[in-house]
Each structure stands twice: as C-alpha cells, then as structure tokens.
Length: 400
Image (cartoon, rainbow, N blue to C red):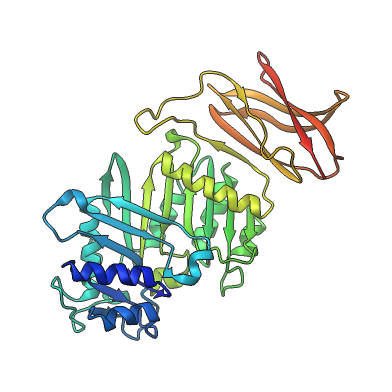
C-alpha cells in the first residue's frame, strides 16, 4: 500500500493486522508527513514502512496492490483513485477504481518497490527513490478485458503531456472535476477543444490556488467553483463519453492537474478507453454539475450490456421528467434509434407554447436535458417531442 494519508481508520487497521497475523505480507510506503494515528497503529503492530524523505513535494499516491507477488495470476488487484484512506474524507467527493489484472498489478508493484527500495519484505532507505530521483521504468499500455488502459507515474513519466494528448482527442464533449487545476497547457487545450465544437464543462474546488486556471476557464467554457461545503477531491477528466465511435476516455488517479503533481509529487494516473466507464463518470459529473446549478444537455449512450455494445433503441421514446413535481430544475430524456432533427417544446394547459427546450439534430441514443424554471408560474405543463414523423407528449407539474 502506498498512501499519502491514513488516520481514523480503525476498521482497516484491524483488517490489516488480521491479514498480517494470518501470514499476508504487508509492505507500506508513506509520505514524509508527521505519522498519523492509523499509520502509527500499524507501526506499533510491527509493520515496516518506507517513508518519503524531506524533499520537494509529497508522496501523494493512494494505491493498494493485492496478491501481486504470489504465483496465482488471476487474483491480482489494483485499488486506486482520489480517496485518501482517512476518516474525514468519508464526507468528501471522491472516486475509486478497482482493476483485476496481473500485468497492471506488476507495473504498480515495480513502482512501489522503487519507493520501497527493494523487492524483499524489508525496505531499504538507501536505495528508495522518490520524486525526480525515480525513473520511467514501468510499462504504460495494457489491454484489460478488451479495454485499452494507459498507466503513468509522476514525476518520471511526463504525465501532463499524456493527459493533454488525451484531451486533444475530444470532438464531442469534455468534462472534468478537480481539486486543483493550475496547468495552463491543459486549460488551453480544453478551450481549444471547445472552440473546435466540443462541449466543455468543468468543476474546480480550490479555485484560489496559486496559478489557478479557474477564471480563465470560466471566461471561456462552462466552469464552476465547487463551493457547497464538502471538499470535491476528484482528479478526473472525461472525453467523449457519449459515443463509442469517438474514443471515450476517462482520466483518473491521484494526479491533480497542477505543477506540483507534474514536477515533484509521487502520483499515479490511469487513462481508460471504455464507453461504460466513461458513462459512469459522466453520470457522477452530471450530479455535481446539477448540484451547482448547471442545466446543460448530456447525451447518454444507450447500451444494455458489455457484450452488446452496438445495441441502440429500436424506437423513439420520450421519458417522464424527473423529479415530478419539481422546482426549480427537472430533467427530460428522450432516446432515438438514429440521428434525427428534433424539437422539444413546452406548452401550458391552454396549448400555448411557452418554451423551446431543444431544437436541432440529436444523435442516436439518449439525450438528457436539464430544464430550469425562471419566470413560469406553478401549474401543469406538457412537454412534446416532434421529429416530423413522430410526435408525443407528457405532463409535468411545476410546484413553487
């Protein structure tokens, strides 16, 4: 386990001690920070740790490798993401991904042992390497369950350039949610994608960090300051999550889009090409976006299962809005078997058109529209979809 933070986690401490007592070999890499209570409990129980020396940056990784050193290749797991294993982060906004793959576990193990200083059960501080002392010595490209997966460690692997290259592939949409965003090269790439026709939306928590790109992004794309009380601790980007033909990617891990992550910190980043994972992250993003008052349109890919990625709707369908009754925002969804010109309109009980909610070409699959009420009074309304050859409507209730 390589962790930046580990405290107020008695359940996990007990589980690790129980694992050690039944013969599991546990190795730990930790940051240079003052030892926190849960980590101290492990040290008191006889666990050995490799602690980052006092050099620039931090050991900011959050990953576990399970059973990467045994002879059974089918049980190797990597656990990683943005979540520090700390009690107070239970209320923070985070993401974690778990991957069952031998080759990926071996790559993470190699990175771990570079910071551990040996491939044995005993750390070697004289050989342990952190920050700029590490080398680019792990594989970067994997195929896992048919998915293309890229892996990069910082600062040895020039991770920011790999993130930028992935952002540059966006041709329909680009979403991100980040604790910190200070890299102007990534901000410029996002704006370039937006100017090239992609929808670009983002959420940043630490908008006042030195060098923050928030104000620049806000003046060019739909960008939000996450100011709702809890900490948005994500470090993810989502590229072209709506269409499998557009090469959907998810960028996630411990790496903030910052100079510190690129130049000094020990970090890990995964770039995963997969429509289903991209869709899951897009749903998470949409929730945060709506919480902050965002009311844009999202196109959701419509698939039934992993085995049948080409399955699309067989008919035009208009779904019931949710929530209903509502105030002030509700979501309306329609699905199409093929690309069509669509008009989605809102009418009052007198049959008068009071709003056009969507007008233009809609792609095959689901289109999700957030509708925010401003001046309309409480009452019953009807929303209607019209494609020329098909028309239907549903009732909604606005309750102020």
